[in-house]
Image (cartoon, rainbow over all chains, first blue to last red; front, top):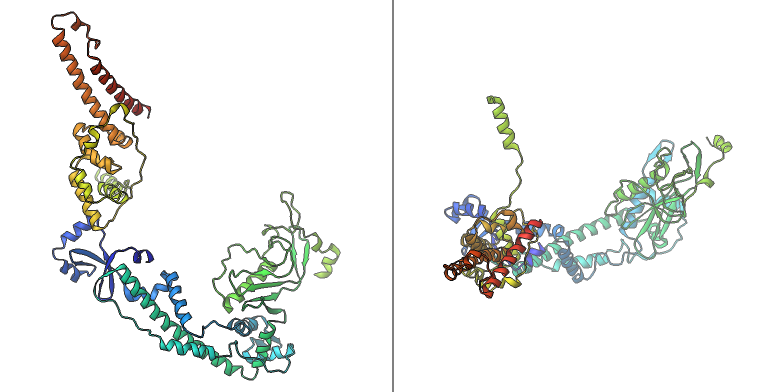
Length: 375
Length: 195
């Protein structure tokens, strides 16, 4: 589309549709000549129009073009969007470094999945209140007033941004029917995109404010617990935890594997110590082992290594569901992915002659006497 | 062949894949777009041989063509389409299909008029300028040899020289020109044989 806009071609607008100059070859010309009256062709198919001696062919609906431009011309759309957001005083993303939606997602959506109730008949996931109660039990929260500004509980910046957006015009008119140059079309498109961005952002902000108000209402009394966790930046309960990366709003969400055993080609067991399998809240979303660790699926004996997973396509964005899937995939790969017969992965547990070894697992092997007692 | 077999073979024949052939329009249109030709090119077609009439065979380079991949089909803007069809109707000859540049389009008609029986291989391999010079050289050579024969007939009427039948009695300039033309034609022929 960008090439079309910058082409210098004159287009035709008719009834909300963009018509492009008709391209010719002998077959098309024959078809055009076979239609005695161009206006007649317009009536029957509506796809070709004769305007000032030139034929134009129907191409795009201008409404559809604007509605889908985010997908087909992301560069221009992002430019327009950032211009609108700059204009709005309270940027939506501004400030939320300590208690953000990412942290809320981790605490209320990912954490309950991995910390399940397991007491007698009381099985199931934790609700919001129960999670907060559990955190309060496990973590000693000092009694103190926590600052709510720059957190999801601070609605003021959002409300200010919403006010600014309300002032901006979110309507656009279609260009008048007739010939339109590429620069005029470009100008119109930018205006229409701007109106669309304003409308979209307005809806987004309204939903966001509503969501936060609901959250504030539901965690009203225990808000200090959340603010304390956000202030600390890390938490670990029952083998599940997260830790903030630097001062940013990104986290490593992890789950401990506990000790586990793998067998080699000859049936000998190897004991692997506990490690933390983690997924970041930013791209690339691939599971890693946080500690200095070695495993057939890790390239070296090092820390922060990605786990080798054949045929695995990482997701494109952070969500609770994706984080849970990734953690499970990573842990399953370490615990159950190694096939002693195929010796899959970067390394094999037992020594092979053909292979230039870089990582040895001899020191993990359980002596034959102990193997029986471990069974 | 019974009826059933006949029907079967006809069906098989109709289902058979046929190689896709580029149309003349696609080739000429590609040249129009590649060389950004304009309407003024049509006036050049009126006097195609002007710049070649002065060409000196002695220093003429043998120009070979590089293989060009023409598009399978082409769609073009109205102006380009009109120009393409105008060129096709103006330069209406079978050699146009083998032209790979605007120069060749201009020469193709003259070349066809001179020798309409050139093979596709030759037309695909050599630049039309080389082929045109070669044809002209052949024609000029024929004329000169005819001249020489006439001259000998006149000079040697009744004399012993006529019976020699060699060119030693010809003026030097004529002899030199015939040599030049012969060597040029031989160069083209040699190149053709070497392929």
